[in-house]
Image (cartoon, rainbow, N blue to C red; front, side, top):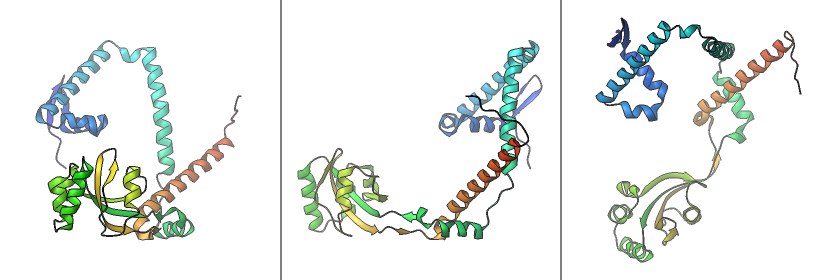
Length: 249
């Protein structure tokens, strides 16, 4: 494994590219996006240098000997140890496919598909314009070409395609109209807060049972969480028998 490139040194201590990546991971993806350019990476390096300088100054001034710092350190250590103990307790739990399949078979009601639609639309600002477009489609213009030509929705770039959706994902007026349509049908203008929609229903997918293979990973994760919870609660009951607990109300 190649060594991480050193990007700075402070009083002899090396700061590497791994340190930069670690810093970016800690601040989260949304904030980290601001630092993805060479200039942004350099700002991160400078910040890591600043933090190291502050650390050296703190050590020189013996801030690590302050009682407030020691109290804070003890609280942090306490929290970390609890988290470490929990992770260590449940780390060995695993779920086999047979175990997951048994849970699936006993809880099939959790793995139902909702009725869904695959549809496209054209969005315009006037009902008259929508009627004119419907007339053009009736005369041979493809729905997809009409969407590219007239729609004000970004979906026009893909011929108006909205993908697959279930009830509750679209505005009420759009949803009510779409779920009443037949496959391949093109709607009359549908008014919503965004304007007037012409809807084309491509496919209707009925509700039904999801196969085990479709949800195997989801089921395994659920069973694993349950096993980890049982392990945790069992350990707590064991510890309650070992250490006195008093709830003060």
